[in-house]
Amino acid sequence: MAESSLKQLYEHITRGDEVRQNLISVRQMIRDESLRRKFMVLLGGDFSVLTGLLKDQDPKIRRNAALILGQAENEDVLAPIMEAWRTEKTLFVREDYLKAVEHLDYRPCLPQLRARLAEIEEGEGQEEEPNQTGQEHSLWDNNKHLAGEASQIRRMIERAGEKKRHTYAKTDPAPELLLVCNRCQVAATAEQIQKGSVRMLKGGVFVRDGSLEELMQIRTWSEMLFPIPGARPIPAQDREAAECLHEMKVYGYLKYLHGGEEGPYRYRIELKGKRSLMERKGSFIRGLASRLDMLEKGGIQNDDTDYEAELRLIERSDGTLAPMLKLFTLKDRRFSYRKASTAQSMAPVNAALVLRLALPYLKDGAQVLDPFCGTGTLLIERELILPSGTCYGIDTFGEAIEKARANSGTIGHINYINRNFFDFTHAYAFDELITELPQEGSRIVEEADGVSFEERFLRKASELLSEDAIVAVVTRSPKALEEAARQARQEGQDYRLLQKYLLNERLGTTELIFRYHRT
Image (cartoon, rainbow, N blue to C red):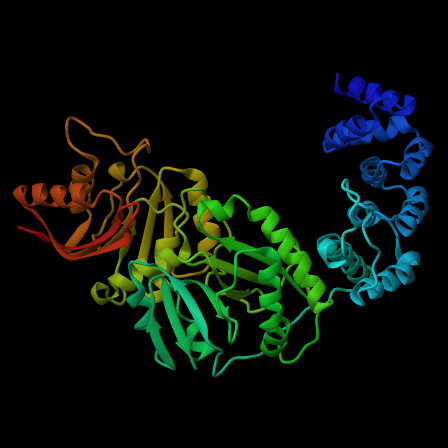
């Protein structure tokens, strides 16, 4: 059915019937790889109809015809598309001609591309055709089209050669930076920093004159962001934001962080803010990137697929944006063991925080059990924070167990068993039980004979724990677990609550640490 529809659409295009709309329909259909191949078979190598449309009076017909031709990935279409690009007067079409040929061997066209780039950067690009009111647009009013064309040319020039890879250079003292960490437990990260000055903020730790070597060993922060020196809040309008960032010398700061290495530095933009801002996220980012690339003249280059840095823009309470940089040239190898995960897997940084909070109660060489281990993250982090004895991880999900084994590799002495915790027995008792309880909706979380899951969990745990064992549990139902602990005391199993830490205010996720006694 789809194949016959493609044939009908092409016949209409050939006859000149509703050409623009039919071209759009063809473009949408050939996004499907199998339909794209069938359409190319239909053309049979005859591109004359489509190349003829590159001279149509309607710029949108020219644009769509070029993009369809590019899907052919046939070198025969390179010359007509590049000729159309060379003579095109309508700015918004020019970038799409180049996108159409970027997967072809356009290297013979590099001199033309470089000449056009220089022309744009010198402010001598072509003006847009008159709009519907007959008014001329100025060059800079159309800068987003020129900048888009320039960015595309830069990508093509770079792709034709070997992409430059930059190396982060500034270590000790480290530049001013922000460690993003758990909003409820900022102090757990701050107290690990021994060098430099530290200031705790609402969602992170600001560090000045710190040691990068030390900071890269701390496992409880999730992101490292670099404020741009002299940065001030910038407006949430794309053009004005780009000009502010240019004035802040973003490119110069990237060069400084990388030992003076020249660009281009490839970057992406990430925007975080309220709903009203996020609804225009796409257009805002496109406009900002186009203008900024133009102003920086190739020093930085927007690239959403192969980037070295992220320009993070965070909306403030007054509607302005706070700009920061996240660098991917600075390798974070703290969680390199993480080779596999599932949708339910705990993030390594969260597991590291759970163990950091429990550290005062852990002991060297302890026998450790995680009865709902998933992909093993908690047990691995337990071994990394303090060497343990033999560890056991249990889970009913066989795929998770296989992934846990892959993640653990040779870390510690961890044994994984695909079994239901409530059926598990062991020859000796465990000194520590560390786990995240399954969430509601899991098959294992259900009442049995009127007994809650938390009560059954603590009853079973008492069969496996040694005297004075530590039980560290992450749960979204802390009240239910505390109530289960009170019930257990009445049955002669004392789970004495030592500490309680809120981990996520919205979800209610909490870590509770008990000491176990038999009474």
